[in-house]
Image (cartoon, rainbow, N blue to C red; front, side):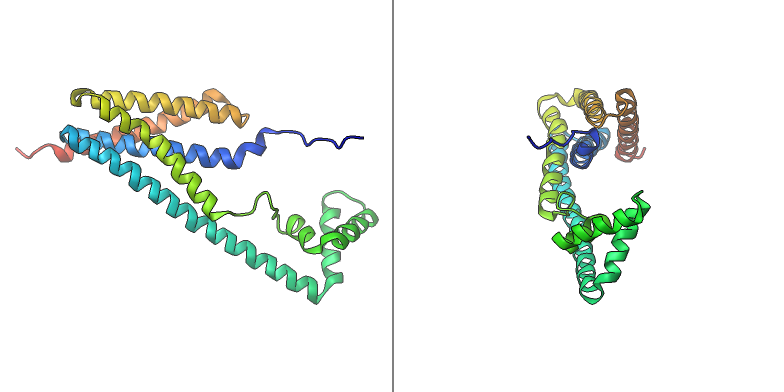
Length: 232
């Protein structure tokens, strides 16, 4: 008999989807806002383009660094928890067995069956059973700092490339509307795709990302315009 295949659920996409959307969204919003702020200060086309390049490179490096540090801390915590669990198993196996069985009882199993399940799982791999069912850790969800850093940097750079390209091809007089329009359209599409992939409301996802991104760009442009206007 063929082995049953696991069902695919939208929630399975949540982790990678969150990281990709966060990175690309930040890339578009941060770089577009930076460009609009500099453009609002009446800077030259060359300076606006330089700001876009700096926003892409600096933002990608910042995302990579922040994600690496954050996920490394998570990985350290996971390793410490596993090491503590290993010591507890070695020091008092029966107590750990009772603890695991109690977890299964709370999940709905009858006590005799819960003890039997704990027996079989601990006989196979006691640490793995406790890591998964007591600590909520698994190979699938394990923290991977380098992978997370690279993914964040690449997704941010991909998003930031859009306003950079628009600045490069648009005449200086059209930079502000061109960047704002391109960014909002891209963000709306990104929000809709993310919502659909995650099984959420597409219209809500589009409205949310468009509103807050537009607000960020308007505020940044206004501040750049105020600061960049020479005093009379």
